[in-house]
Amino acid sequence: MPSPPAPGPLALLDTTGFARRKRTSLWSVGSLLLVSALILTIGLAATTRTENVTVGGYYPGIILGFGSFLGILGINLVENRRQMLVAAIVFISFGVVAAFCCAVVDGVFAAQHIEPRPLSTGRCQFYSSGAGYLYDVYQTEVTCYSFNGKCQLKVRSNTCYCCDLYTCESTEPSPTYYEFVGVRSCRDVVHLYRLLWVSMVLNVLGLCVGIITAAVLGAFKDLVPLSQMAYSPPPPPQVLYNPAQQILAYTGFCPSPPTVPTCSSYPLPLQDHRTMPHPALEGAPMDTGAPGTRDAAQPA
Image (cartoon, rainbow, N blue to C red; front, top):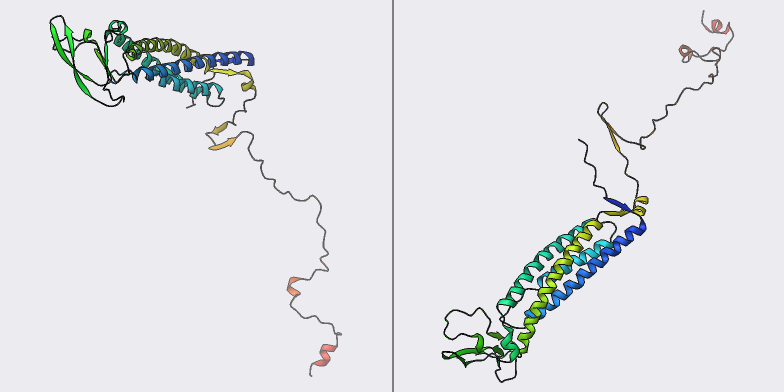
């Protein structure tokens, strides 16, 4: 069964068109790399602002950044460009999904669980342990006043708390954060609120830029310049198979048949049969005497 033909390039471009497409791809991947770096920086700044508020907006920055790095490598490669760009598109696709999820989570958390009005008007208090160290843990009870009376609230050291957001009569946990642990002042909470919205906007931007970059890389991975096709090596010799003779031969590599020596056309020299000794007389002694000598030697 003949093997299926290898998939060829979808488009052949000249040197100018290929360079223009390459430059466009580099701009797209560079923009995505810049956006992913901003997502990672803002996300880490937001998640390290407090101890009791965990933000996961920096994960898309890691995935998109790695995909952008693979894309830059794949664009500048010649041999394995298609494989590297396919891997970059896969990572960018996962990063796009993660950016969408984190944008929704950060936006909902900032809108539902943080109330900036008491923080911006100065109605929240900051409790410090008094020792001057951020990581010294102390605990105290503060008095919060409400419409029906007052109640006690346990607060750790280095905590910004808002009695306006704490309901003394309710036994269920408040949907809004009324205390933020591990901050230096209540201004850090305001910064956290702003960082969450910035992280959400950057994730939405990373979502859009990631989709555009994946589309650009998907179109670029199948482009081949004409100069590369002109200087490509020739295909290997084709193997021919003859079922009748059961012989495999390479076209152009079949050895020439050995030459058979032929008889010389010159006549052989003739020999004189009179000078050649007879085989039957080779062992007999030669008689050189006279004819009467042998009879005289014999006794009478």
